[in-house]
Picture 1 (cartoon, rainbow, N blue to C red):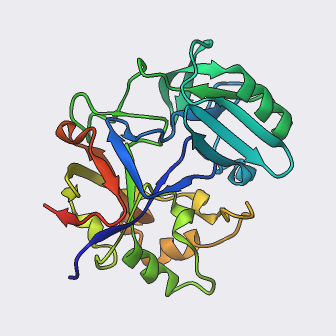
Picture 2: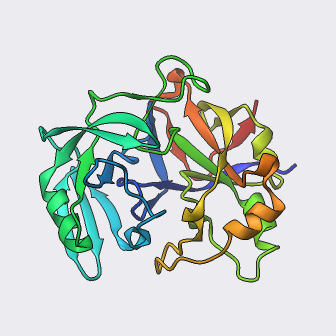
Length: 267
């Protein structure tokens, strides 16, 4: 096996919206700094994602100093504090689990107008701690509004194996990873239980089961039939299509900087 390195880093300030590519980023208990601290919820306070609202892929995000900037070609620009203060407390639902949040009023109005239905933009303030599934995590492990784990790593080797079976190749952005690596054999990452990225040590509790979100083109928001169909055919152990692995940072690695070019080692 050749040397394994980080080739790309992404964070997603708002769950389900377009991400930001980075050269380096601080690692926090919840994952990458600024990752998925905001989320859209519907009238029942249930999380809203590209599974049902593919058009969310068209909203671009940017973090500029202390400001979160959201842009859409038809709906203009929204600027709100990166860390809003106050706001109505709201109990939201992610995959059947309850999580506390605070409502950001200006963002709620912007998205309700843009998508023509009542939505609320909510924020996870620092005092809110959402625990990771205790069946696969340690006491004290927490996560933002991500589906379940602080980070997701994807392997370019696995993408190449998938693309070899597709009529039209897809980009890694379909899978919304935080960390992308190269140099590892296809699917080999699924056997890892612990690893280092640069100076940071992380646990890998499980591979990531994939859903229809990967069929949404991240540039056009068009909903397609691939690559989920082919992934299910070629790589679905126990009937679940897998791509990438979930990661949890060790407490001793909080504050470490992850960077493109970092060496990755399975432990």
